[in-house]
Length: 482
Image (tube, rainbow, N blue to C red; front, side, top):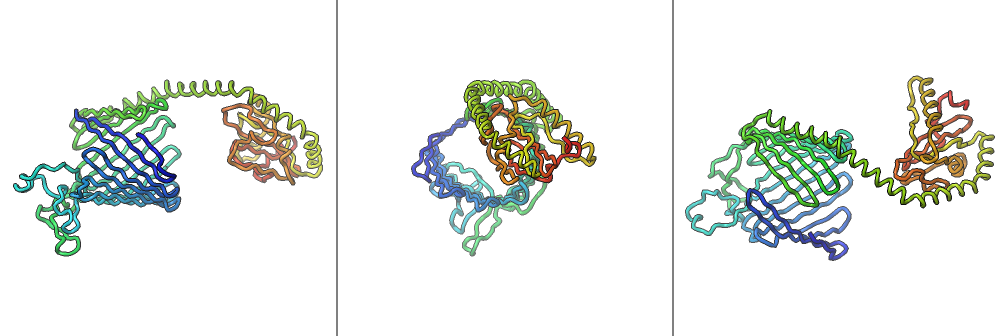
């Protein structure tokens, strides 16, 4: 694909498409113009250069953070012999991370009075003899109308769900899907779909749109839901081997068509899929084995080979970056230490005055890769105090200079009027007197301070805000005498 910006809001794209299936191949060249008038709105028009010609119009508008609207119009015949298929979707945030959507699809089997009354998408393949005398027209895919209600969102930190109910003329269906991310490189999903079949009306049945002149024959119109047509179950896993390679395995179980599997390879923008029909019979044993055995093998390969390999690569890259940045980090450390030495006399005088007045005094502050946590409040006050005491003392004695920096004086220098506020959103190594003691590792800031004679402790992430003094930071009674 090739893209070029014609203006600040208009972009042109030319893309080639090629597909091979069942021993037959096809290809086309697609040209697209995309117009973006604002950050929440865009529209595009696409047309294929080679037969079969197809015109697609798309648009999206995000009214707010909670509402959005999309639309798509597809015209399969440029001579307008068939009606366009229109799809409109409205969605909004319902609660939490759950989004609800309403989609309306018109299909291409409708007519507006005499317009499109003789569309090939509306006439039967067993047409009259006069129609057989006409030259064969290009076959246009038929699409029936439907209304879709959808619900999707996250039910846990790594789990996502999607529910969908479709009501259509020819068929209706209900589906439920759940996806679980084992980690950022491996995911498994499964779902069930129940398909209902409509009961066709007689071929001479008619419906009206507007006046009597707009009466038209409506083939394949369902007079109601006849019964359950099929039940489909699917299970899928997707594994990412590296930045360019993604592997997929999907198993589909259908009461009507049996058990089918499909292996998919995504590599450098290419997609290769190999579908295999295991059995035309709905054999649950074959489906379970086809889903479980590859999944267990893939999980074993993921945990035993791929994930350790990725960690080794990341660690090797971090070591290389640390070696490259060693001189720069040492220079920043030296500058931070020199700044602390310059501010030390004034800071010590301020600490002495604050200690005498019962103000805010930073007794100890460590910044880096700290191997401890502050114990949460326990219903047993004595036990909580002991947990906090031993974890803090052990950590303070174990944290060495290469992994953690002593920023006690640097933090005391930031105290103004017995208050200290550090905003969130950025790394703290850029603060005066701070430096990065361990490049590439997640860092935290531990502060032990005294205010009005009471010892407090706080532990925050590198990009998290810090505001002291706070009553919630008060340590247990066993630490007040230290």
